[in-house]
Amino acid sequence: MSVTKTKLSGPDLPSGIALSAIPDGTLLLGHAQGEPVLLARKGDELFATGNICTHYHAPLNEGLLVNDTVRCPWHHACFSLRTGEALRAPALDPLPCWRVEQKDGNVYVLEKLEPEIKQLSSILKIPESVVIIGGGAAGNVAAETLRREGYSGPITLFSADVSVPYDRPKLSKSYLAGVTPPESNPLRSFGFYQQHNIDLKLNARVAKIDTVNQNVQLIDGGKQSYDSLLLATGAEPVKLDVPGAGLPHVFYLRTLADSRALIARALAAQRVVIIGASFIGLEVAASLSMRNLEVHVVAPGSSPMEKILGIEVGTFIRKLHEQHGVKFHLGAKAASIDEHNVILTNGHILPADFVVAGIGVKPSISLAEKAGIILDRGVKVNEYLETSIPGIFAAGDIARWPDRLTGEGIRVEHWVVAQRQGRTAARNILGGRERFDAVPFFWTRQYDLGISYIGHAEQWDHVEIDGQLDARNCTITYRRGGKKLAVAVINRSIAGLRAEVEFERKINLLE
Image (cartoon, rainbow, N blue to C red; front, side):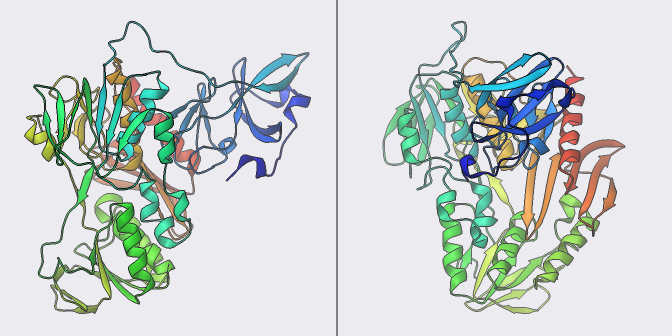
C-alpha cells in the first residue's frame, strides 16, 4: 500500500490550522505534500508524523496518544512523535516527520525532516562482533536494531530457514486463506541485508556453541567467532505420536515452506482434518474453510481455546466456525491415521484428504542445553535478557524472563513479544541496561473476527465480560485472586490500548 495513493482528508496543514482546533492530548488527521499527516498535541508541544502505521497500514489517528508516542490501534506498534522511530513491534520502519511551527495562534506543518541518524555512545562497551542464531522475529529485529542504534561491527545472522525472514502470522491467516499475495510475506529483501552489512546466512544450521573459545560451529563444518551472541532459535511443532503420524499427508505449520505445502495440498483436496483447537488450529481451519474445503477439527477439550480464553469465548468462537461449515469433534483425540482417514479415540472415523496437526510447540533449546546455559522450561534469562553465561543473550519463544507484572518467570510464544525482545536484547548487547518490561500482546484473526489479547494469564479463576460477544463488541478481563492479569478485546481497539497502558503503569510503580 503506497501512501501516495491514499485518499487525503482533513485540513491542508501547510496552509495552517488554528491552535484551538487541536486540544491538548488529541490527534488530528490532515495532509501535507500529498501525504496523510498526523498532527498531535501534548501540552505546549506539537508533532507531525505520517499517519499510516508501517506494519499493516492502520490509521494512527484512530490510535492512542501516550506521552510523546502514538500507539497503533490494530496491533499495538508504538512510534516516537519526536523522531518517528518505531519503538515497539510489530512495526519495523519509522514514520516520516515534518517540522511544525506556531505563529499568531495558528499551527503550520512545513517541510519534511531528514531521518535521525544515531551514534553509539563512547561510554558503552561495544562488542567486536555479534552472532545471532535464528532468523525469525527476534533474530531479525535484533539485527536491524543493532544497525539502527549505530553499531557498525560485523553481524552474522544464521537462519535454518531457506527463505529470508518473513511475516509468520500471515502463514496461518491471510496468506493461507489466499487473501494476501506471496510477495507480501518477506519482511525484507535479501538486498536489504546486504545494504545494511548484515551477513544473512540461509539454510545454515548451528551444531554447537563453544562458549570457551567464543565461536559457533555449523553442521557443515564451518565456524564463526563472536564477541556477543543472541540465541533466537524459536520453537518447533509438537509432533503427533500415533500410528500413521509420519504419513506424507500429515502436515504441520511453522515455516513459509509449510504454508506453501498446505496451499498446494488444499488446491487438490476436498476434506481436511485439523487436530488441535488452539490458535494455529483454528486459524488454519478458518483459512482452509475460506478455500471451500470441508473442515473437521478434533480436540480433547469441551470448547475451542478454552484454556486461553475461557469456555464462554470458546463457545462463541465454535459457533462462528460452525456458521462457516466447520465441524467439531471435541472430547476426542486422534488414535491413528491411515492414507484416507483419521480414527478417533471414541471410534469415529473421519475421511481426510490430508491432516494438519496443531497441538502446540516446544522451545528449541538443544543448543543452549549443550552449551551449559541454565534452563527453566526454556532458556532462563534475567531482566536484561542475558543468559547464565555473560555475553550470551536469548530472545523469543525460547526465553523465560522475570515478569514483574505477575511476579513470575514467564515464556510467551508470540510474534510481537519475540520482536520486542529482539530489540531489547540488541540494545543490551550494545551495553545498555534496559529491562524487558513490554506487556505481552498477540492477536488472532478468524474469518472477519479479530481478537486482541493484552497481558499474560497462564492461570485465572475469574472472567468478566463487558459488552456482548454476539455483537462482537466487548472487553474480556482475566483475573486471579482479584488481580487483573490479561484483557482481550473484540472491536474495542482503544480499550485494548488503554489496558496495555494500565499494565505498563502498574509495572512502573514497581520500580
